[in-house]
Length: 99
Image 1 (spheres, rainbow, N blue to C red):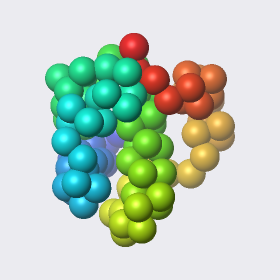
Image 2 (image 1 turned 90 degrees about the vertical axis):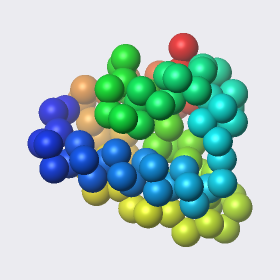
Image 3 (image 1 turned 60 degrees about the vertical axis):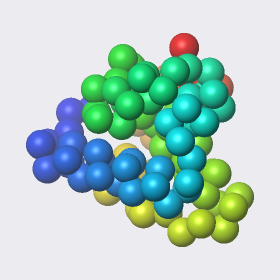
């Protein structure tokens, strides 16, 4: 999936706002997802190693926010069920680990 420059910019802002609202640090997110804060930073800047990684972070943040009664900012490009996207590996996304 190729995002337009506007979608990339919006996704970057949506990640940053959701992380801010969650109260989580990049280090905490990284620990939960089995990676490093640098990898998380690279992903939310919209330069993931694998396209699945952004969906893993998205899903983690949204679930965390639901579990903690925090209102998330909706994602405008990373929407819907990841199973519906041919370019995502549902097994990797479902595993929820970035390695």
